Each structure stands twice: as C-alpha cells, then as structure tokens.
Image 1: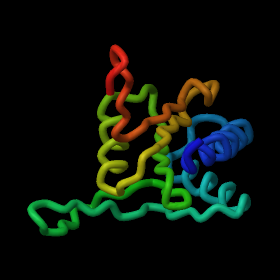
Image 2 (image 1 turned 90 degrees about the vertical axis):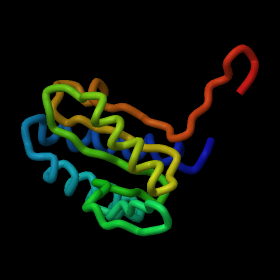
Image 3 (image 1 turned 180 degrees about the horizontal axis):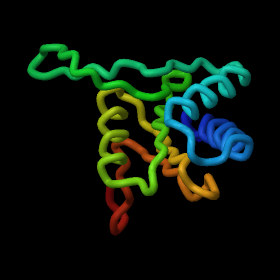
Image 4 (image 1 turned 60 degrees about the vertical axis):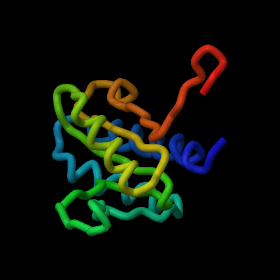
Length: 134
C-alpha cells in the first residue's frame, strides 16, 4: 500500500465524523476548517489553501490556483458542498495532483445525506492493465 493510500482511510473517517456531527448545508470553508482540525488532532501535517504553481515554458505563473488541503504532502483533498459533483470538479483535482506531483486525491462533497455517496478517490497517472499490457 502506498503512503497516500494509508492516509485515505484516516481522512475519510474524519470527514464522516464531521458530517455526522454537522450534517450537510454548511459552506465548503467550514468543512475544510473542521477537516484540517481533525487531521491535525491525528498528528498529520495539513496545509490549507496550498498554492498550486503553474509552470509554463519554464516560467512559474501565479494563477491563484489553490488546493483545499494537502495532507502530509502526499494527499490532496478538495472539499465541495453542492447538489452533485461535476466532471469539472474531478478535472480540477486531477490538475492539482499533476501540478503538485502528488498521486492520490480525495474529492469530498459534504452536501449529501450519506457522506460515503459524496466521496471520490482520484489517482493521478493511473494506468490500468489492458489485455495484459500497460
């Protein structure tokens, strides 16, 4: 199991605990703050609103991209609070993973009745075996 995979159960467990206590309907920033707090209680290093640099033709551009949470510099967590997740939400997380050179991310939508229905795990640069070949 890779290091990021070991973190995902802890993050999901903390998110479920928060959702059970607070329920749906708050702002994304509230869930983000609570999740950061819970993860720090587990002695995990958490960076909130981490800048995501964009390098284009050897120039570092500050475009204002930010990852909601980066845990132990190995897992990106994007918190959402919306009726339904959209493909653009996954694309945003994939971009953050690629630009931060992190392999695993969690997209968590707190605006659901059961939080397990609002969690998506995304893996950057994942290649499935197709017909026995990579």
